[in-house]
Image 1 (cartoon, rainbow, N blue to C red):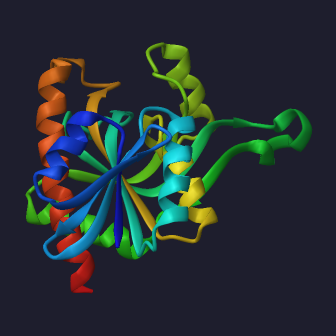
Image 2: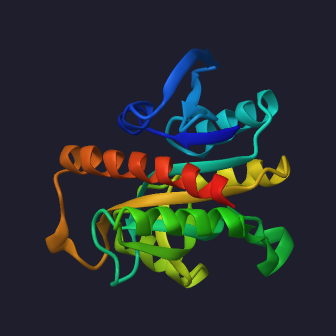
Length: 228
């Protein structure tokens, strides 16, 4: 069974269009939808926004299901010039950028890093190529912060200069999946970028387009995953 995690209703709704749904349940505000995509068992989980909700939902997902892999889709802000709105980011590394115990642990207390599964990463790359979706592979920075100030950007890039996008759930999902030893990969759609303000898109339009694109990617990802 593949676990599919998304934070927003629009993302869940678009993926559900590809699911042959068999049942649904809600546990502690986390929604779970069961069924198949391409005859493969999946469980679709709506996590909610932020690391607290994401960690709870992912823990419930891991404890109650026998998972072969987890894919998490969502939205992020772009941090490099090469990115454009609706490009996809595929995780190589995920870092909890707001984790800081340096007063007692020194430099080693800055950030928690987790590596995405290499095979799942390749399945995502194949899915992007099959759907002709522009993509980038790199470090996803996760923090419970919607970055809007220049100082937020400068602090993040000073501490984690390899970051190529910033968002609010991936760090928790990566940490929980790693603790349960379940392979995972994170995929983020770029909603805006620090460098290309002229590419701005009205958010409701963006959510519709990004959710549809991410749903197509998930379907192709599952096909690529089982081709191995």
